[in-house]
Image: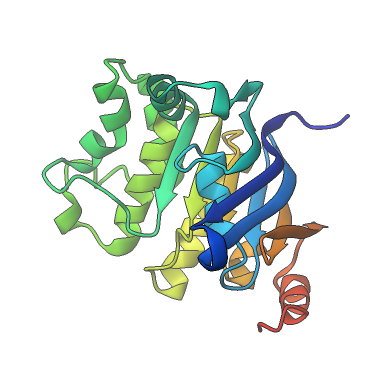
Length: 244
């Protein structure tokens, strides 16, 4: 049985600039991102990885083509409708954590629901906090937490509203290797244990090894899909792009 598609692009094209200076960041990209799976997006620098993620997440507009979250085509939405969709259906984890410094860890985790006037489900918040191992740090502000703990808070925040999909853009980029591995394990567990969907941009073959599948981009185009990736298989594929 084919898995449900949580997000997809149809002939997605993104061009920055115009005329002789135009840069085609995405060039006719059609990809399906299945629900309940951990998908990594990889490719050489400038391949269009972050551009693809930002367009699928509704943070940037396509020049042409379509993006769907579930059955909703993002190009058909008003700015307000798009804001609501992002808040209700999408979670984000960034390299820079993006926590509010004056709020506690728990207040940061529940912030999206606070802003939308929703009451967090206590049992779900408890499950999320247990998954990311933050039970004894909930009253601490970001300045009192390590980088790895701050990223755990960011992941918990992304999970807290039960989004349809979490987009993670180089989530271990500012972390040491050991802490990065812990964060990847938490993302993996959010898929395996909590049924979440995660789409992650990364340049690291080791990070991609935690995923269920890897979409490879090159020169703004989707050029390969690898199921059941291992770090070595991903590294070998990357070498074909001239990167090791």
